[in-house]
Length: 231
Ligand SMILES: *Cc1c(COP(=O)(O)O)cnc(C)c1O
Image (tube, rainbow, N blue to C red; front, side, top):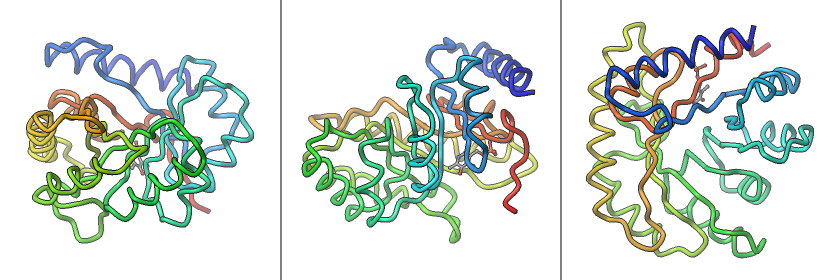
């Protein structure tokens, strides 16, 4: 089933790239494996997937230990609490969910303490100003990235958003477009520690629109692994 799902998603990514005049290799697919067992991750791995997304530190760390493939890139896509940074900072290719200076400060501190190479992060944006969502307001971004860029051990690679839940993916196009504008604007701020090349947006319900609007990373769970059960 995972193989067929991956083929289906891949076809749709390619079609969205063609519609928007983009090359396929400008879009990275992250398979969001949260709540799913290790054997499903291995199945996706055997079908060529190397990037996996988890939203909980505990789950990411235990899967990291259980799966031996050294070429897997783990992405932390969920809210990160400061007291969990220590455990996860050496295990992630990219932390998608940085939304405060204090959190960035904690990441920086741990990178230095553990003697790690600089950690890549994205700033999470609450693009539709939803009260229930994490992420910073678009108006606060510039100041925040300048502050974070002063910290050692961190590279700001771009932006992430979770667009509103909707049955009509077209409704999210305006938000993806705003994210792309921010992404392009902030490339002017590039310097040491700021190297804006990634725009992480689009999930199972709306990834094609996100690609049409410039996503460089799409995060797909249900479309690959099926519905999640939280029992
Ligand atoms: C769960 C999750 C996804 C994947 O959602 P699907 O709708 O299952 O594709 C993507 N991004 C984040 C941040 C998530 O928590």
